[in-house]
Image (cartoon, rainbow, N blue to C red; front, side, top):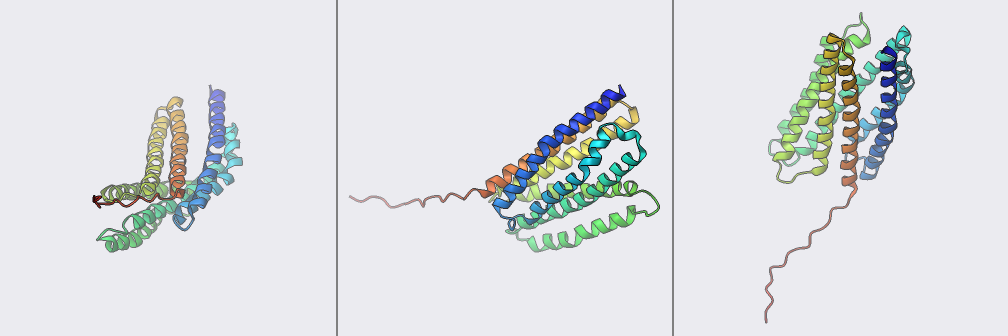
Length: 250
């Protein structure tokens, strides 16, 4: 049974890489064509995710291939994963805040919203870091609750972004898709964490496997939606011909 579980985890990870890496390259390529200046933090977020994923590949493959029993491999995998999450989630928080900044351009209270964002987001991260950081324990032990707090904050901001975009008379469909992709990613992570917690309590592998499968699907769904959003951003806006009210005279 244990051998079968390790084999299933390994091949799920391989399939994930085979789909995920080409997809994130397509997202980065679409962001470059759309113009990095339009969505600089979206571009930076995808590049950072790609680089951290590449750095994790050797250890991740070794871990899922069945070397969990080797303490050094398991510890290094957990530390590397925690550090990458500690880089990714604060960056996503800043990216969502930047998208809210863009979405609030035509709102009357935009100055208040932007001041709250510029002051509140860094303050939240610093306070959460001060609460959870502990130099006497492993990185994983304090990084995990920190990323959980940052993810929660990013999820709340993503809901605010959705509300702003839906309330706007001129809807930016690219921003809506970018916000939707983030929403799928955040929701998938939250559900996966809940399923893994349940699996650890009841020691039932199908629950853990379903969490892994959902994580793969949510990550692929997030990147696919971003790819489509940035592809739409490349398309030139079609000009609507002016309507003529002149009545033909005889």
